[in-house]
Amino acid sequence: MTPAHGGADAAPAEDMEDTDPGLARERTGLAWTRTAISFAALGGALLRATPPAGVLVLAMSALVWGLGRLSRRYERLTDLHRSRLLMLITLAVTLVSLVALVLALPAGRTPLTPR
Image (cartoon, rainbow, N blue to C red; front, side):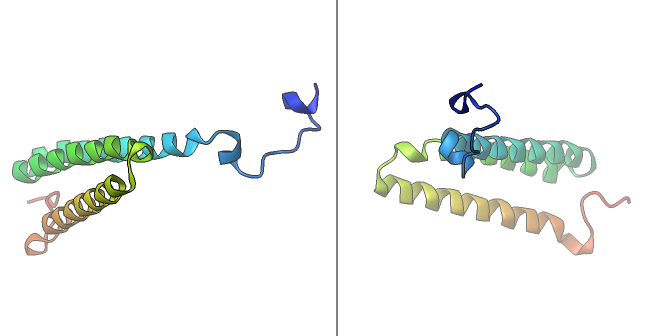
């Protein structure tokens, strides 16, 4: 093989982004999806122990998944819309974190603590 075809003499790329710039965006999208699935699994487990908390966490999983879908559009937006999108994502992640904190700290017990 010749170096142009990835033979043994080919020098590795300095950065993976130089080889395929779309990989970082794809990994980011997959991370948002994986996080939303984790929230949904936790919400399903909580439904059994504490139904109101489970429903809330399931709603948060839909919000997290939606944010991931929005973040994929970042490259196509103007500067004004980018700053608004980043503010929306920041506020939503903060909201999810505060809801998780409120669910985790009621009266010194967690929703999954056996009764």
